[in-house]
Image (cartoon, rainbow, N blue to C red; front, side, top):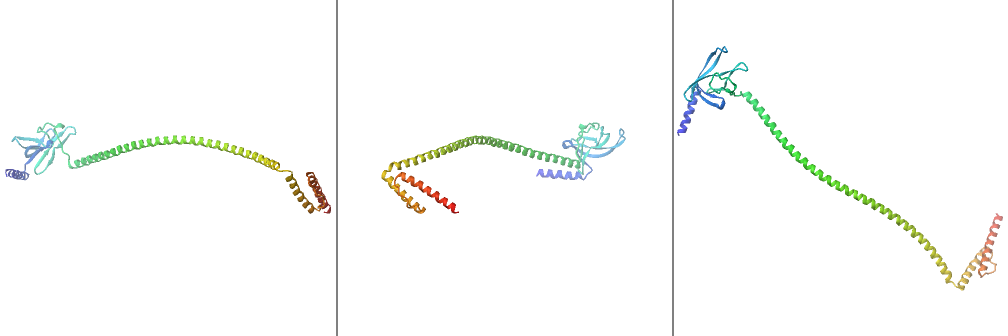
Length: 279
């Protein structure tokens, strides 16, 4: 209950303070509360020849204070307003101490105006966005490097396999060439062998024919020879009958057959001569 009463009392005090001509006086550095500003007045500065704003008040310790609400900027030679924020309740000054003669840069802490703050916030967001993009690109780059290395290793492996296959193909080609040459040699040798066999078969056929003839003659006796001669004589008579020479004497011996042959040839020649004369 005491806390609630205290809070309600503080809220009531702040409400009354905001409705009064007084302000809570705060320094920008660390948002340090100096005390209560009781009066803001104009004072003439003979050094600059202008009127300047001063604030008077009471610190939290009950001491009185006063200090200018502007600054003499030695570099720009301008009078700068030090009030960073002001509303019905508080005044925020950029001055870090109440010494009015301390115009060094270290004695001031400035707030940015909303436009500058928004612009800087946009720039900070842009930088962070670019950092994020760079980070993503870096990750993608590292991933691409890893993938490239993997592909490189695979390519090296495939290259080794191709080299091994190439060696196998070369060996097979050499073996195939050797086998082809060997086959050609075998083919040539086979052809020569076939020619030799044909020649030997021809010689063997001649020998067989000769042997058959010899065997036939050796197997015949005088009676077989006489019978064969008689058959030839009968055939010869038939041919002579066709030629009109059927009245010739019969022959039985080998000499008779030879003479018969001569007579047949002579008769044939005489007949051809008669035919030529008749034409």
